[in-house]
Length: 334
Image (cartoon, rainbow, N blue to C red; front, side, top):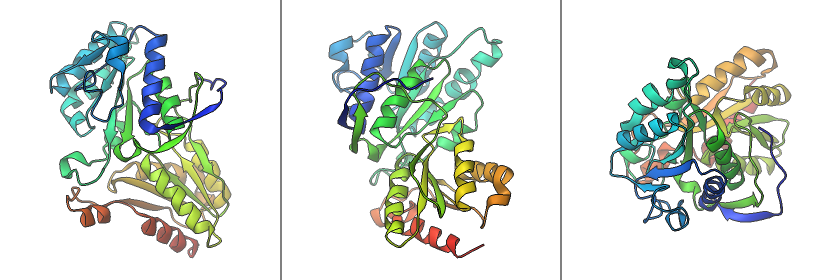
């Protein structure tokens, strides 16, 4: 999928960029519809679908009961029948209730039908920790979905990437998991006004550097960029790779960066054990071991259910000090 020419950029929030992407795709293709809890008259839990029911009507913007398995299954069947549903989960923590539909149906129908049926659907909504939402509403579950063949997984960090990748996801012929970090909705950035898409499966180098590679995604990308600026003030030049798409993973871009810098730090909010960073590390070790000047370092969330109290919540999530310290320690090795 090629990126088309963009007109002059607009300054939009992350939620506005998502709104614009869905609105443009629903106008372009009458098969696209939105379904989920409070997506219509309430305009979405995070107001991403603001104005949709007024423009597209209740037949294309469907409010549902609190039944994630039910409406995800309904959308899977609709996709098999030729429609292109966008399923909004109020939070990806509730996606656990729909795992049977996602993993055993949406992800497998194309394979089990010998390619006769496709499931062109997007399952999107907020993920990761916000501010004191507790253990059951603060999880980073993207590694779960990446483990499943048949699913594509996207976790953009900027409004520009969110819009372009969501449009690509809606047009894709496969089920796509599209995770939006809750704390990103209010962040702002430039977004092209024109009809543009961003290829699924292509990482982006957000900062050029020569001393160390930082790999991150979603809201951890903003942390990595902050760390890059702090390190630059101390004479350390960090290259920052934004994964954007988690599956398929653009390992080629990561390896090329590591071959240039010789060192790699992976930053992820999810738990350490069997996390996405483990897969990235394995891939880099197998393809660029001889270029590494020191072992790969992972900065991750702590191996605990997310605490509710703010000091403990902050302690459980990677922060600027942890990332900067990891880089400095890595540079002393090798």
